[in-house]
Length: 226
Image: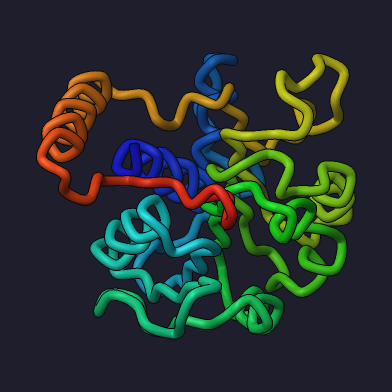
């Protein structure tokens, strides 16, 4: 499911950087915005720095797409400082805040473990570059929702794109719904017209490998949690 989730993360990132949420609201109101004061802040995608937190299958696909758009990609992983050639720099968990300070967009693609629960908290958001964007397609419990709300409310963050939240479903009265610069989708980033076929192919291949005594694909390490 890494590819459609990565598509979703990039779609959220580019929509926010190009001001699409505001234009959608104006379209729904039948309003052609021709005054400069009515236009959102709009950024060029190429040249922006995107930080992937969690350079696994999903994070690698996010990085590949961002690099293809001309973005500078940096990443955090906990296993090594090595990464694919389309990632300019790879740091370890102790480098997280320093890397966050460099990024125009941060993408959470972490699994949920004891170490990643609540990792995106007030300290992390304060370390992020002013007017940057936070995208979350990993697990909702990695983000302290109240701290994200505070970072958005203060204007420190320019916006957020959330496919996962804490709690889920997000209650109707939750303040995250009210931000005009936040895109929320209901944990659907893995969906695509070919995803079920991809799952079936993987299951059949793993069955073949199991019968043949070969190592299986996408095996989860229970001790590590991913």
